[in-house]
Image (tube, rainbow, N blue to C red; front, side):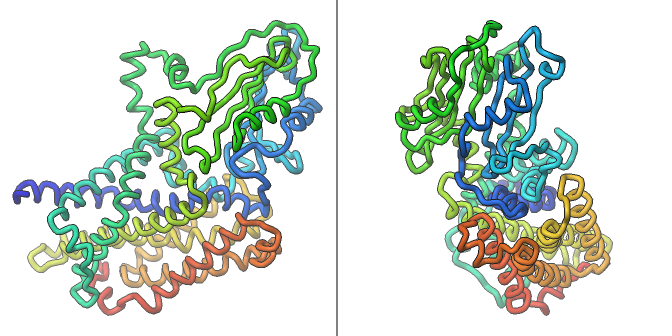
Amino acid sequence: MGNRIYNILFHTHTVSGIVISVALYVIFFTGSFSFFRDEIANWQRGHSVTQEDAISGSINGYLDHLSEEYNLYGRDVELRHYYNERNIAVNLGASQDSLASEDDKSRIFFYLDTVDKTKGDYVGDYHLGEFLYRLHFLDQIPYPYGRYLAGLVAFFFLFAIITGILVHWDKIISNFYTFRPWAKIKTIWTDAHTALGVIGFPFQFVYAVTGAFFLLKGILMLPIVVGLYDGDQNKLYEDLEYNHPVYEFQNEKLENTIDIDAMVHQMKEEWPDFRVTETHIFNYGDKNMHASISGYLGYGTKLNGLGYRIYKVADGSIAQEKVPTTNNSYLDGVKNMMFRLHFGDYAGYGLRVISFILGLVSCFVILSGIMIWLVARDKKNVPERRRRFNKQVANWYMAICLTLLPVTALEFIIVKFATHVDRAFLYQTYFPIWLVATVFFIIKKNIAFTNKWTLISGGILGILVPIANGVASGNWFWVAYQKGYQHILLVDLLWLILGIISLWIAFFKLKTKKSELIPAKG
């Protein structure tokens, strides 16, 4: 590689990395916890889930319960399992009956608790797992600006990791096995940055590509919609198989008994290990009533086994189906695999724990990149005014990033003792605490101090998380283990181990004297 090309790649890597570093750190840190979004939700609520990745219980029972409060005749009724929580999403379409009341002609959406049958809306049922999941693609910034910003960060991150690999390509093997803990500070940061960057490269590449795809697809699809579909989005959605078919309402009541459970049972017999995630009923109670039952085969059976069947309820005939046991289309593969790769949910807890660790490793790569950038510019030949500015920038960056650990741990404790947690509560506690902590460490103007005390405070608070859970709910480690509350146990163990490791690093692994060589004092 020539010097000119090397310099271009090196500066591209440096500039793109430092510009996106803070947003990228927030995305990776909160994204690591997002692997356990559902577990955090159940931990906060003290819930256990009897069946994962599918609608649990009887569909007939849910329909009977809904019919006690709502007139379902003529409506489209959809029950959908989004996450591994007790809640399922209920969407009631407007009734097509000409004699229906005004209330029946309105659309209704809510979440239904499958155990106690209570209802809730999105804002009221907002939990800490959802908050961290949304924060990992900056969704708290008004739509669509936050998502587009996160998408651009993912896109430029792709540039950063590709240019980083190319810059180190000639010595990638030798550098990978090189670590010099007693060398000068820049060498330590560089060795750690290179080694961990190479280890996490496949993980980071996948998340850069899939993250940019999900968050920028609205922009990417715009030329296709305009050029190939003349601006008709519905036609595009039909081709992508996102829209349901349309069945005409005949305004003649169905005399047959509605038994969706029997249809589900038939599908599971024909397709072993089939998990039902959505039931969409067209024209409920009408002679032309149809029931669409969708789901997928368990990942242990087939990684990309999407399927559905639409029954005509009047005679039980099959109007349309996609058999999951046969080869799925290229479209199914692209749509499903992009989600599976990004969520890391196709190989059980093992893969998600590994992804969690690699996400935190990526956070360290980002921090080491900031320190390399600072130390490389903290030289005598650099004007003093510019050196002070560089130190101030690094001080701000490190304060914003490193305070996420103790602030997140503290929020886990707060939600266990709060009487009511909703979206407003999480916004009004998490962000102000983060702001105060960030300002405090910025004022200290010492990166070594920030690093040490965010680890100590985060470690102590992390260990207190399972204690707070036990005091508030009685679900101590041994209780959760005995009752089979694996979601609750997982979150407690996650924080306990993370807290212990943070304290171990703070007290036994930090090189305080070397770190103090690069204070951010202005």
